[in-house]
Amino acid sequence: MKYLSSIFLILALGLQLVSCEKEKKASDEISKPTLSYQASEKGSSLVWTAYKTSDKVPVKGSFKEVAIVDNKAGETPSESLQDLSFEIPVSSIFTNDTIRDGKLKKFFFAVMENSMTLKGKISVESEDSGTLDISMNGLTKQLPFNFQVEQDTIHVNAEMDLNDWGAQAALESLNEACKVLHTGPDGVSKTWNDVSLHAKILTVKTE
View 1: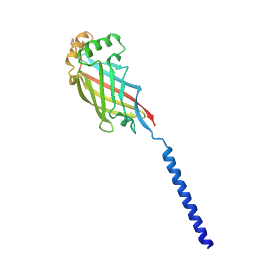
View 2: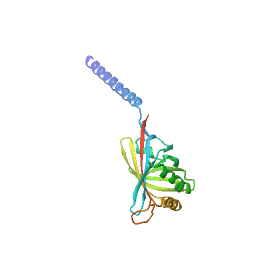
View 3: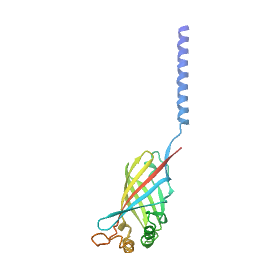
View 4: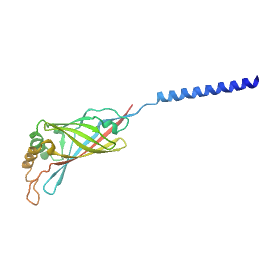
C-alpha cells in the first residue's frame, strides 16, 4: 500500500507541475505584446532627379512635405506599405534655388490640371516590388517601383515618364522658361521627360 501511495503522490505532483507550466506559458503568451509597424511622416522624404540638355545633366530636388493620409499597421515594415496613401503639396518643392523652385511651380505644375497637390497610393506586389497609383494632370497612372528594407526604413526607387501623365505641354512650357539654362554645348535646349524618384519611408513600431 505504501508503494502505491508513493506512486499516486508522484503522479499527482507531476500533474501539478505540468499544469503550472501550462498556466505559466499561457500567461506569458497573453502578456507578451504584439509588435507591428506603421509608416511615419517624420523622417520620411521624397527626392527626385530631373534632367536637362542633350547631355542629360541631372537636376536634383525634393519635396519638404509628404503627408500620409491613410496607412495601416503591418507585421513587418514592408507590410505597412500596403494601401498607404499620401499627398504632396507642390508648394513644398525644394531645389536649393528659389528662382528654379518658382519656375517649376509656375511653368510646369501650374500648367497641368489639378496638379498643385500630387496624390498617390501604394500597392505591394512582392517582397521587393509594387506599383504606385499617382494622380497628376487629371490622370491616375500606375508606376512600377522597387524597394529595399533596412531595419525600420524602406527605400523606394522608381523611374517616371512624365509623358504617361500627358505632361508634354508642361514640359514645353518649362523648357521655354529655362531655355538658356537648358541649352548644352550643342546649342540645343532640352528638358527630359524622365524623372528618377527615391522615397525614404520611416516606419515606427506600435503595440
